[in-house]
Length: 127
Image 1: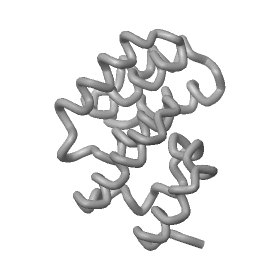
Image 2: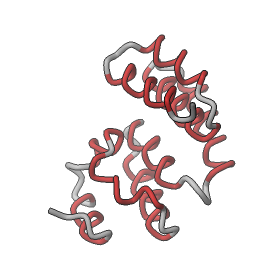
Image 3: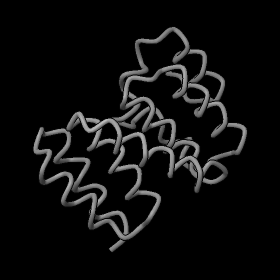
C-alpha cells in the first residue's frame, strides 16, 4: 500500500540498514514519497549524484504540492537554508503536513538553528 514502503525505508535508514532502506524506497508506489526516500537513502550512501537527481525530480514534480517533504529532504542533507526556504513555502501554501513539523525526524537537525523557534511560533506550534 502507499506510504508503507516509504516508512519502512525511513526506519531502516534511521537504523543504518542502508541496503534494506534502498530496497524499500524502490518499492514505494507513491511517486513523491519514492523520490523523497531515494533522495535520503542515496545521500546516506554517499551517492550524491543519485541523491541530487531524486531531489531535483521531487522539486520539478511536486514544488506546488509537497513543499514540506522537499524541506525534509534538504534538512536531512544538512542544507538548512534550503530547508527553511521550503518550510516557508510550505507555510505559504498551507501545506496540510505543517501540523507535523515538530515531530518530523527529518527536521530534527533544524531544532538547534536560531530560525527554528521563530518558525514554529509563526505557524502556531511553539511550546
